[in-house]
Amino acid sequence: MSANEEKQKKPSMPRREFSAEFEAGAVKLVLMEGKSLPQVARDLDLLESALRLWGEQTKTD
Image (cartoon, rainbow, N blue to C red; front, side, top):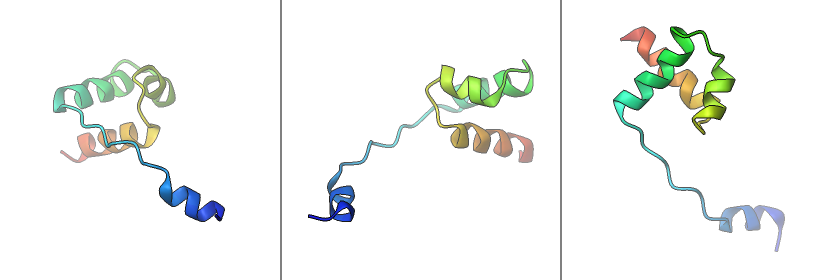
């Protein structure tokens, strides 16, 4: 079995969903309280990319 076939068989993690309040609170930690995005992502067990996207969506709203 090739490495590519093994990757395809590996079950993916279910996508987590977060409330609007949670997302807003996470973004607030970065934008208003001056904490670094990587630190907030680690503290809340999030991907930095998700937190960055939430911040961008907040700025456009």
